[in-house]
Image 1 (cartoon, rainbow, N blue to C red):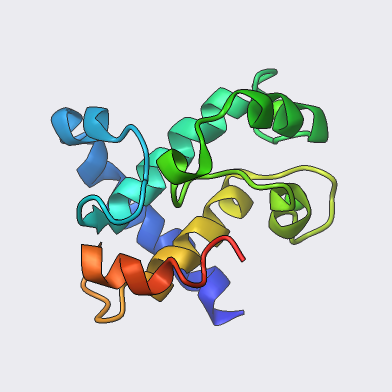
Image 2 (image 1 turned 120 degrees about the vertical axis):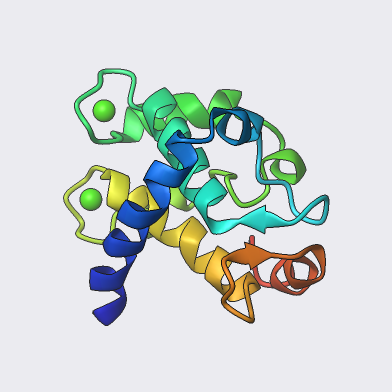
Length: 139
Ligand SMILES: [Ca+2]
Ligand SMILES: [Ca+2]
């Protein structure tokens, strides 16, 4: 419960920094694990971009049809890493059960995995930290 209050605040703080650094934002192609350190703000930026791509009718919510369409064209799991949309993504992400995925719901799980990886909580998941988390991610 507490987490659901804290996360939006963190997101609000992290997002402008990404927007102010277009070079870094543009470099966010994927969130593959084990290749380079990943910043928490990158996860937020990636999921936002991905959400926009998925929400083809631009109603601010991902429908089951939009989810399936994206799944059919997304990068391979190893390339997408933290951003991979798995088979159970929709059911696990729709935490309020309203049949759509909101931006907040879309961010919650990847950020949870990120926080799992970022053991020391400094906002960066090092390659070493990612290798530990990859044992849990995708299960
Ligand atoms: Ca939509
Ligand atoms: Ca929902």
